[in-house]
Length: 88
View 1 (spheres, one colour):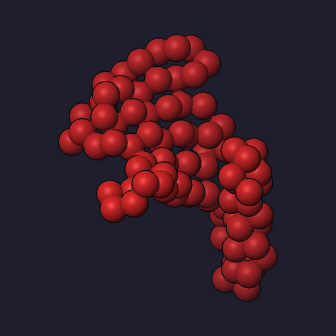
View 2 (cartoon, one colour; view 1 turned 90 degrees about the horizontal axis):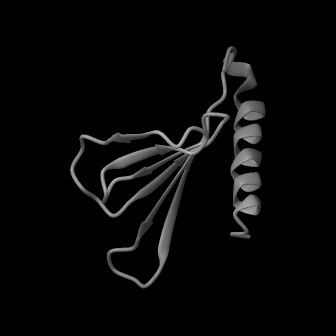
């Protein structure tokens, strides 16, 4: 897993501990890159006292007829991540 801290502009590999700089504008965002390629981005709301979570998951779609199946698998992955983080 890798954690990107856009405010501190540093990316940390959680296995090796290696740190690299992020060459993007500073922003109050943490991004977690998971082993399976999924991403969880977290930032405070700009208008309310709450934290917002954004999920990005990926799977191959080889045949357009499989769209609903693949979409269902991706939605299940997002729900699993939310459970792992105890968000639901």
